[in-house]
Amino acid sequence: MTGPLVSSYWLQKNLNDPELVVLDASAEPNNSDFKNVQIKGARYFDLKNEFSDTTCELPNTLPGPEQFENSCRKLGINKTSKIVVYDNLGIYLSPRVWWMFTVMGHQNISVLNGGLPDWISQGYETVVPQKQDIKPGNFKSNFQPEMVKDYDFIKSNVSLQESVLIDARSSGRFEGTAPEPREGLPSGHIPGSLNLPYPNVLENGKFKAQEELLEILTKTDINQKPLIFSCGSGVTACIILLACELVLKNEKSVYDGSWTEWAQINR
Image (cartoon, rainbow, N blue to C red; front, side):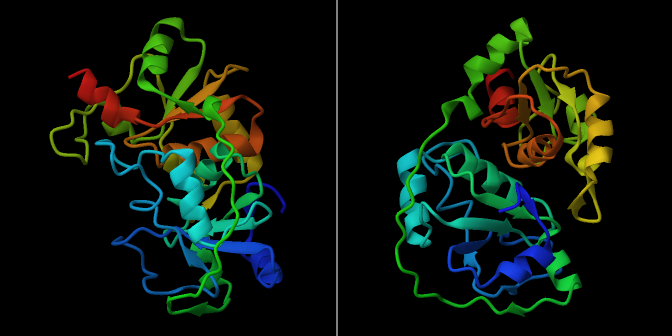
């Protein structure tokens, strides 16, 4: 693999690699122009049901290592698999999937830059999704707890400010001038956090060039401190995290409960 991002050209050239597993992380339903199509051989990664802790009242919560491992094995994913993940909105859910695999100790994973829209714009083949006969894999989770932060850690950091908390939501939601999409949840932000709306690191459905990302990120007061990323429920936080991974060496983690948890506790 060539790092956390691959191009449509790279994927097309490597599509027949027997170790390659392509994951389709598209949300359903959604507002994509590309519905009911996928890259040939792609396996559907059900983020909402199979790969979230559905026993938790918070949305999109990271599942435990055992659940993640079992769900990966059902998808035929092996310890040696080279994984490429995409979604049909360009860059939206795929960075979350990349982060989840990284948390579970699997480094050989990349996001398709530009996702399905870019793949189609390049004229590469798509198919109608169909049921697949998949041989179970031998994936093994190796959980990296330092990559996930909980409420207590965030509350402590409000006082200590040893890490920089970056919020990927819109400036309106961050400032409390626009409503939250979840009913009954106030808008606003965690004290001491910085705001970097996730669209700021994207352009035409792809990540901006590394020089542009570095310019955007070095404008924020992060220095060499560990970085923690949050949003509404921990999904778009991973877009900013991946952008930082491309250009910064800082230690990185996600506050998985994000604003939904913080706002519920601190009403």
